[in-house]
Every structure is written in structure tokens, then in C-alpha cells.
Image 1 (cartoon, helix red, strand yellow):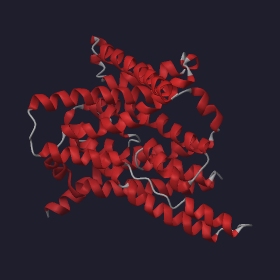
Image 2 (cartoon, helix red, strand yellow):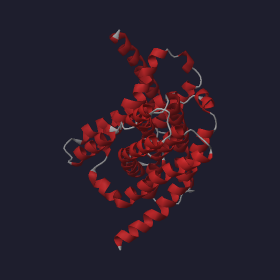
Image 3 (cartoon, helix red, strand yellow):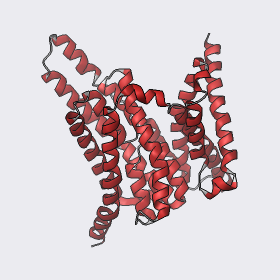
Image 4 (tube, one colour):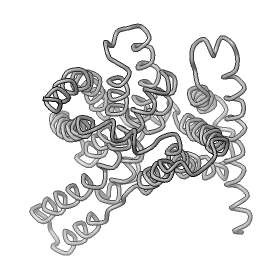
Length: 357
């Protein structure tokens, strides 16, 4: 029984690996190179085409293997991405990036809860959607779920919103940057990308297209944002516990049970693994050939994660959720696009001037 289950998971992983190999092959086509589409972007496009065409013919027993790629493979890929960076580069990012990340996270959650109340949305769904947009997309939603203790379909809807707008950003950001619409330096563009895109994988995909300098900055800024998930979950847990205690309930025991459930906190281990990889790489102990090999493996793993993410992006899932969660996500997206741009362009510059002064 166990062997059969493991075999089915392997089938799903191999399917995604096959798509990823195809993504690498297609990414080498001249017209694809001219568009600067990395294997990561090609992979998610292949996944989305599959999701809305042949996905219904996929054996359900293979689905756990695909989900494995969207979670464990993605996180392992982000950890290995640390071998592209050093702590020396983190120091170069400095205090302005941390401050901008903190502002983005706090304001996004506040706006999300406020707009959710105006739309008369379910509070749990509004909180999950806001947390996903504010911090690190689906990973933040999944991290917040044990604290919020929402129903499974609410988690799925919140994840779908960040996948849609995060995927959209993967194409919009590079296009706006190349068109000269965004009057930003490479460092500012990396800061803008890392502080406003939803998923870590989306940041990797979009920033890789725009160049290594932007990519390195964007990933570091994004991981600083991911690290903020831990304190946000702690504060969320306390806030929900207080709300549960004050709530009018027919049963005191039921309220206590809700409070106890919402006290559980999930912290993303891959963020710490990413930092550990950067720390190890900072000592320059491995030969460059080995590091290059690790980076190639990492690119393939991230392509697998992006492809698997695409296979979960089906139109039918979104139709069931109704319009309100997507209206909320759209409002948050507009704030991230506009507010994030202003912070990256003007706040970053002013803070740097103050620090120099």
C-alpha cells in the first residue's frame, strides 16, 4: 500500500519533470530567447495550458506528486538559490529595503482587512488573501491557515488569487521595465520586484528575465519579506485569540477550542535554509564548478515548481469562488503596483540620502 502510494507520487513528479525538460528545450528557441523568457516562465505557461486542456485526464493519484513540486521542491529550490548570493550582497541592500518591506507588509494587510469589511467578505478569507498578497503568496496563506483555522476551500480561494496576480506580474514587470515605463535603476527595480510580487517563485521568474543584478536584489528583498511571516503570524495569533475571547458565543468551551486552535504557528523553514546557504556560500569554500552545478540543479527545481504551479491554475477553480476575493486581490494588487513603485523610487532614495547625511 505504502509502496503504491509512493509510486503514484513519483508519477506526478516525473510528469512535472518532463514538462520542465520541455520548458528548457523551448526556452532555447531563438524567438523565445528574443522575448527573454526563462525556463521558469515557459514552464508555468506549459502548466497553465495543461491545466485548462488535458488536466481532467490526469489520474487523481498523481496529484500529490504535483503538489509536492509546488511545495517541497519549490522550497528546496529557494534554499539552493542561496548559493547564488552572499551576505556581502545582503549588507549592500541595507536598512531601506527592510523598512520598505515592513511598510508593504503592514499596509497591505491593513488595506485588505479594510476593503474586505467594505465588501462584506468572510473575515478569514479576507485575512488569508491579505496575508498572501502582503508576504509570500501561497506559502504565506498556507502558513497562516493553521493560525486562522479556516475551511479548506477558503484557503484554496486565497491561494488562487495570489497565483493569478503573481503570475500576471511575471509578465507585466519585465514588460514595463523594458518599455521604460518604470524610471528605476537596477537596484530600485530589484527592490520594487522583491517587495511587491506575491510568490517567491514569481519573483525569481520575473527578476531572472530582467538580469542577474535585478534578480539578486529582488530575491534578497523578497526573502527579507518572507522572514516577516513569523512575527506577522505571532501578532495574528494574539489578535485572533483576543477576538475569540471577546466574541459572543453560545458555548464557552467552543470559544476556548477556537482560541487554542488559532494559537498554532507555522514558520517557513526554507527562509532560514536560504539564509544558511547564503552564509555557507559567503565563505567561498566550494569550487566555482560545483557552485555552477548547484545553480543549474536549482534552476531546474524552480522550473519544476513553476510548472506545477501552472498546472493548478485552472479557470474552473476561479469561477466557484465568486468575485469578491478577486476584487479584494485586485485592489491589493493596484496598491502593490502603485504604492510599491513610489516607495522604491522616492522613499528608498530619501532614506539613502538621510543615511549618507
